[in-house]
Amino acid sequence: MVYLVLNLNPACRWILLPGTSFEIIDGLIVSYLLRRLTIPLLMPGIIAGAMLAFTLSLDGFVISFFTASPQSVTLPLFIYAAVRRGVTPQIHALSTLVFWATIVRIIGMERFTRRQ
Image 1 (cartoon, rainbow, N blue to C red):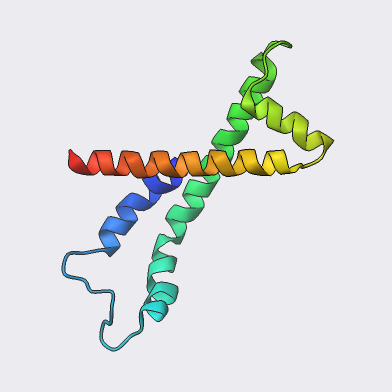
Image 2 (cartoon, rainbow, N blue to C red; image 1 turned 90 degrees about the vertical axis):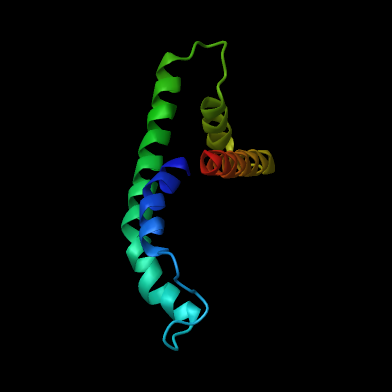
């Protein structure tokens, strides 16, 4: 998520120029502008962020898989072992917690950097 935000931040600042109104611009509806203008302009940043996040998550798993001792259980190894046995509601809950923790951290850091 962080890499997606870092890739989209410059594009959003370029699109959201001062004085731009997103209610109606020259009679165009907001959904049309979003579908035909905003999303195509942001798509390179979305794809780049997704590729970076996927690559780095694989890197984190590989590093922990090969360097962890048999007694230590890291979160990626726990999830990997649990998914091999079958996806349970516990894994869904854990994934939801990790997702929301990431969202809260991103929002917190974005607010922190805006103040400075």
